[in-house]
Image (cartoon, rainbow over all chains, first blue to last red; front, top):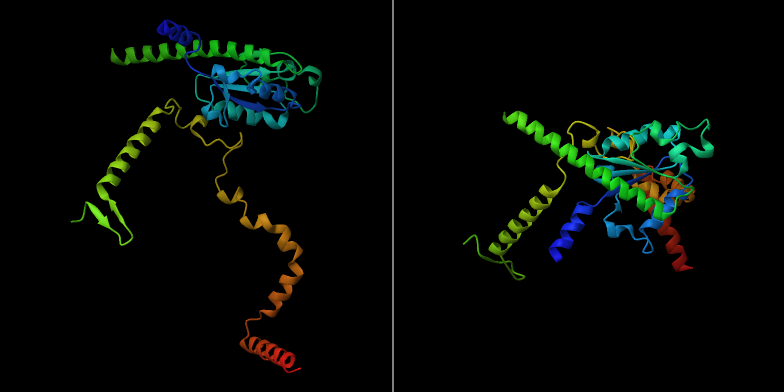
Length: 162
Length: 113
């Protein structure tokens, strides 16, 4: 019985997701909601998600806010520093579309004009439940990426052997 | 005998126990090191130190904050006093002997009076 439950759990969540949070110009509203998901009320750490202090330890990059001109290069740099496979989650309307700041002179646009975005979480700010749903989608995407990377590596190994 | 129990004068310690301890610690260290991620692409940004998304400065002095910054306000507030002390320290021996003579005379006068 225990074995079956363990297998089911591992099938759903084989590896926990570690997230690096980057505020690329947010008003901090989304960041507060991200922190709220970590509180005992929502407790996203029960799913293994946690915020890490370095992109080199992260599986996912969570971006809040539209990308200001100052942050563009830094955001790209942070993304480049993450090991593969990696996903990008955008939290909040500003990061998804630019929202009311869309035409602002100081922006390089929404996040998908700077980085390849995998999951969009809308809201101003989005509720913690929405962020948890976004992370769950990111986990699925990450697993798919991981499998495709593993199969590619296996193909390369087969070619090398033959 | 070199190995075995060593008397230090304040007690004793067992050399073999320490060798076993260091061997165990080394095994643990290598285990944790091997458990880390090894899929970084060497020579790319993935292999670089994380410095808040900024390029890592080549010269450490660019990012070093001297310890004196911690008490900058203190030294700034007392700078007139320090200037006076510095001006007194001329490096000329006759000046220092003069200070000694004058100070001794003042203290002697205070005692006598």
